[in-house]
Length: 69
Image (cartoon, rainbow, N blue to C red):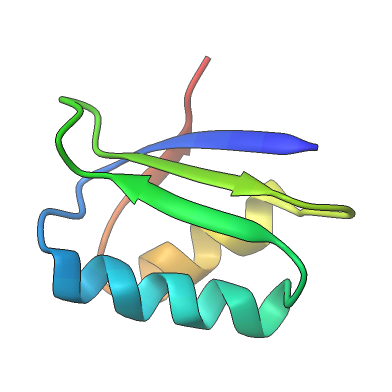
């Protein structure tokens, strides 16, 4: 399952921290940001991925994420 999110994360350092936190919840997942995209895309590919958990992790880090249609 691949979930794609629009975020407002701008720095590589912060995206790295968020990826580490998401890997804690989804250790086998492939997670990456595309900060060069105008929507600052977050992609999470893994089994049993919860959009609500991902959005919550990003929110607790001080940023916004929403499912990209």
